[in-house]
Length: 213
Image 1 (cartoon, rainbow, N blue to C red):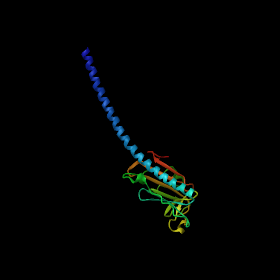
Image 2: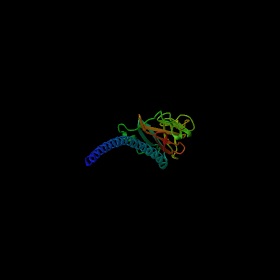
Image 3: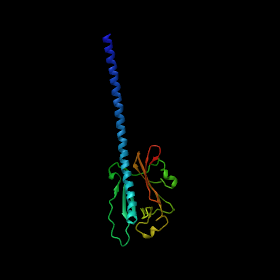
Image 4: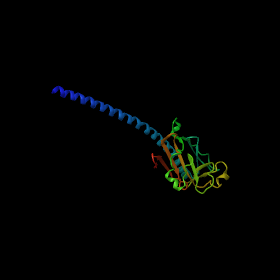
């Protein structure tokens, strides 16, 4: 009787060991999968923060310095701010450009995921036709750039030619949406909208089924 009981105990111990090993393998696999997405999401969040901070800095500079601040989005990931001085002003201090994820390889870039829908701001006239979508509220062309005014709004910019600033579409509110992400990875999809009339900046992330704030 004792020998039979020992055999049962040994058999059950082996089965339990196999179950434990399988559970460890499953949990390890889940952990590996979980650590890849958070790293991508963290990188996407950092890039979004850099973009949002730059836009809000530009707006705050325009209000406090009472000078328009030009915002230039160039290349795949560069954000450049420049205070627009008046003729008798001293030269403005140069502002260093900001690169999404500091320009690291595999970092986020201005990118539109064509399969994803527009942000919830679509109903208010915000587009998603390109990674940097600029929609003049009063119609006309956007011009060669955008900038925040001393009242905090976002408008079109005529750049070097002063006459262009007053053309239709320039100096008018611009509703802007800037899409960023890593191509092929929708988990990194992010969007930032700017309300032309107020300059309000709102970030969004793709939650898998819809844009979330």
